[in-house]
Structure formats: structure tokens, C-alpha cells
Length: 293
Image 1 (cartoon, rainbow, N blue to C red):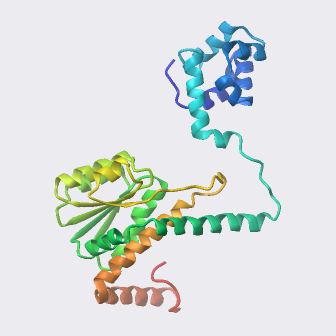
Image 2 (image 1 turned 90 degrees about the vertical axis):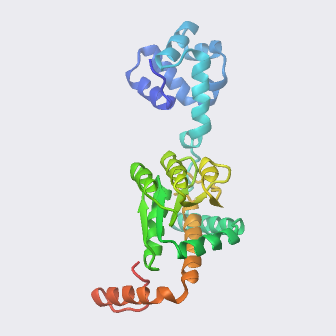
Image 3 (image 1 turned 180 degrees about the vertical axis):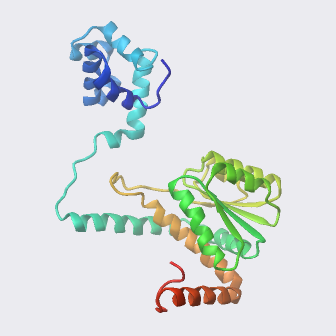
């Protein structure tokens, strides 16, 4: 049987569809993953009330070579996703305020960490370059990074800059292949290992494109890009709450957009005025509303 990286899913399926002994063993493992990942085969067999050869056959039925291989996959599953298998009970007292505080406090802390660790000289240089670029290509794959690529397009087009965002991996490579030295490519990747993004940056550099990466230090993307604004996400362990690093990355993006706008100086004013005028005329006449948001 072919290896399955997600051993937990295979165990869950076995509790429903396996033989009587396999169902018993799967239930035992899922009930105490730490024990199963460390115990000797004799202890597992004794606790389940089966023979040691039955334990070996069970492990092989899951796609593992034997008990040792099974323990390896189980330990890996625990290391990667253990926090989701045995979450701490929720304290539902004053639930509304607790949720509000959990999101806002973590967002503020993430933004402050990102700001404190930024190389502002590099960020300002990126803003100056974007302000004079003939073309800008923003790329990102995945939930947060694709959102950032699209948001950079949203921020820069209103400054009168020719910017395109691509979140499809194949299109990222295609756009990189036709880019020129007058293009600036901005790549987002929280991990720094999104394959299509790394490949697009590597490809673009072959054609003389200046590449900028907002990514984790020491990552494949950081090594591939010419200019790097490093960002290291640090989570607070609350598995029920969306990642707070999104707020920090948006703050970094807004800093880049602000630096770009200041580098363009008054050239941005007419475009912003037109957007404001058009939207207020078509929607609602309230000058306090943000531009196009």
C-alpha cells in the first residue's frame, strides 16, 4: 500500500472500516497518540488485547513498512498537527469580550513586532523604486500571500502606477517570462517556499527584472530575490483564531504603499481626486469615506 502522509486520517478511516482488531488498535492509538508513538510493540499489543504480529499487520495495513515506520509517521503527525488533535477546552465566560480582545491584542502585538524588526532603509528604497517603475508585477500564492499581492495592486494603481497582480502559479511564471528590466516584481510568501513564486522570481531575474520579496529570512524566496524585506510570523497558539500575521503583513504593505506615494509626491493627487469625485458622485456624497474602500 502506498504511503499516506496523513496517518491520522488513515487511522480514523480504520476505526470505521477496518477489521475488528484493526478497529480496536486504531481507536487505542487515536485515544492516546503520545503512548502509541513511544510505546514498545509488546505494550501496544497488551493494551489492545491482541498479539504482536497483529500490531505489525495493522501498521502495514496503514501503508507503513512496520511498527517503527508507523511510529515515525505518527510522531510527525503529532509534531505538525498535534495542537489540533487535543485542543485546550474553551473558556466561554464573557465570550464576546474575550474574542474581541484575542483578535485585537494579537493584531496589535503582531504589527508592533513587525515594525520593530523592519529595515526601514530597505523599505524606503523599495518605495522609491516602485514609484519610478515602468511596470510592477505583484505575485503571491496561498491565502495570505495572494491577498497581499492583490492588495498591493489595489494600493498602487491609484497612485498612477501600472501594476498587475497574479495569484495563479502558471500565470506568475508566464508574466515573469515576458517581464523586462523596467519591471519591478514584488513577491509575497509567508513561508518563503511557495514553489511557483520562487520559480517566477528566479525566472524574472534571468531577464534583468528587479525582484523584491517580503518573506521569511533564510527561505528559498529570500535567496532568490534581489531585495528582501524580511518578515517572521510569530503566532500566539490560539488555534480558533485566524493568523494575526495578516495584520502585520498588511501594515508592512501599507508602509511600502506610503513610501511609494511620498516618492511620487504631488503626481498622485489628480488621480486620487478623480477617484474620490467619481465614487462620491455615483455612490454617496460623503467626503469622510476612504478612497474606493
